[in-house]
Length: 140
Image 1 (cartoon, rainbow, N blue to C red):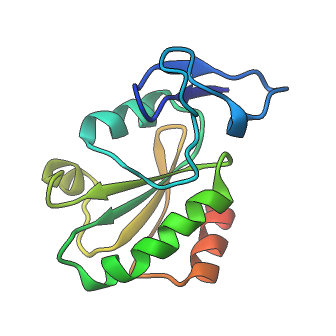
Image 2: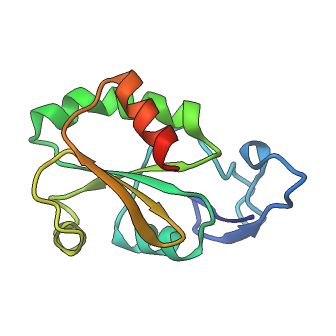
């Protein structure tokens, strides 16, 4: 399995017989999974999309959005439950407007699942914990 380090963006290979959850980066020696949703910019997102073998679950959000604020703790908690089967990423649509436009984000929060570099699923609107976990598990 090939994984991008969320700290230094180095590419790491993790053998199939080793737990990815415990794996550390060969360059910076930090954990490849943090148990938290990662706030990413366009550069980090594109590197993970192109190089990381894990499915990516992306929350497109904005600081001014009430439903986004309401769902943030739920999304954060889901990261600890879903990793290392998938990575949970957060993209601020105000800071990364070109990325939001590229994926035609019309309402927020919008959640998307990417697998092998391609969009696999999308849902808009805040989800509660059980609905979010079920949606992620169904689509990764």
